[in-house]
Image 1 (cartoon, helix red, strand yellow):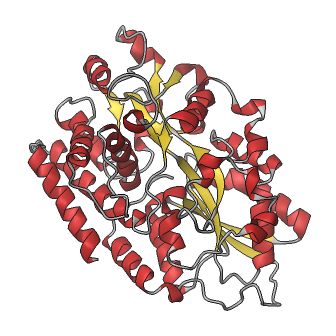
Image 2: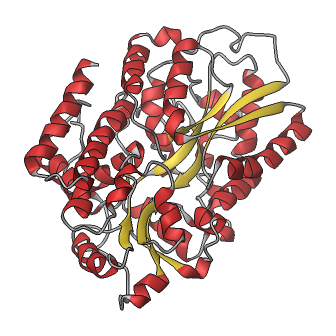
Image 3: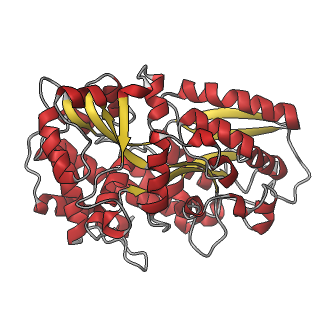
Length: 438
C-alpha cells in the first residue's frame, strides 16, 4: 500500500464508521437483486508515475473485459492523498463504486465497517479458488479468522534503490546493508547540492511503512497482542527518532523532503538529485521518468546489523494492493466477474508487468518475466524478511495519527529544531491519545 495525506476527517470518519457499521454496505441492490446493470464503477489506486499513466495501463484491459462480458467499467484513478478518505466517506454514505482498490494495510479497518463483500469460500470459488493466491498476500486481507474483505491484486515489498553513477563518482563500491553503513556512505554522497537518501515526510503511509519496519528492528509493534495502541514504547520511540534523524542528525536527507507527499523523492532519484530511495517496486516509475534500467541498482533495505530476516531483522512491510467489492453494488455478479478477470493469470502478468510489481497469484508469479535482479530482491524480501502491518480495525487511524506525528517531526527537523527522545515521545503520546478519544 502507498501514500495517504493527513486529514483530521480521516480519524473522525473512521470512528463514525466503526460505531455505525450499518451505514455502510447496505442491503439495497445486493445479491438478491434482479437488477444487473451493464456498467460497473471502479476506483483504481495510483500505481504508476501519474494518473494518466494508470489510465493508459488500465483502459485497454477494461475494454477487453467489456468485449468479453458486455459490461462497461467506468474508471476513476484516485490519488493516494485522497483514496482512504474517499473510501471512508463512501462506507458511511453508501455512495461508493462497485469495485475498488485498497491498500492492503487498510483491509481490517475497512472490513470492520461492514461495507465490503466478504470473500467466503463461495465467492473465492467464483474467481478460481483461494489457493490460487500466495500466503503472504492473503495475510493482509483482513482480520485472521474472518473471511477476507478483499482479494490480492498486486504484491510489493520495500527495497533500497541506488544510483550507480552517483555511487561510482563518490567511490562507493556497494550499497549499504546496515543503518550505520547508510549514515557513513550517506555523508559521502550528500554534497554539492545533492543528497544521499530521498524521503517523503508529508506522505503519511510511507512514514508508517518506514517506522513500522524500524519498530520491528527495535522490537516494537505499535500495537499490543490484544490490539491496543502502544506508540510510546522504547522501541517505537527509538524507531521514529532513527528515521527522522536521517535528516536531523545524519543530514543525509534534504530538508525540503519534509514537504514531499507523493512520488517527489522518486523524481529526484531519476534526475540524479538523490542517490538512494527506499521504495516499493519503483522500477516502472524510474522508466517512465526516462531512467534506464542499467542506471540504477537494487538491494535489500538496511537492517541494524547482520542480514535481513524475521523478527528484529525485518526490513519491509508486506506491501500490496487488494481489490474489494462494495456489498451494496447493484451488480454483484458483474463485480465478481471483474475481480475474476483482474486476478486471472493472463491479466496478472499484464498488470504486474506494467507496474513492476509481483503477482500475488501463484501461477502468474512463476512466469520468467517476474524474475531478474530487481524482482528477485523483492520476492526474496516478501518470502523471508517482510512482516504484515497489524491487521486491526484501527490500522488506518494509526496511519493517520502516527504518520502525522512523523510528518510534524520532519517539519521540526527541516526547521532546525532539535529532535530528542522526549520530543518524539511527546508526539507519539499525543497520537496515542487521539486513538483513544476519537
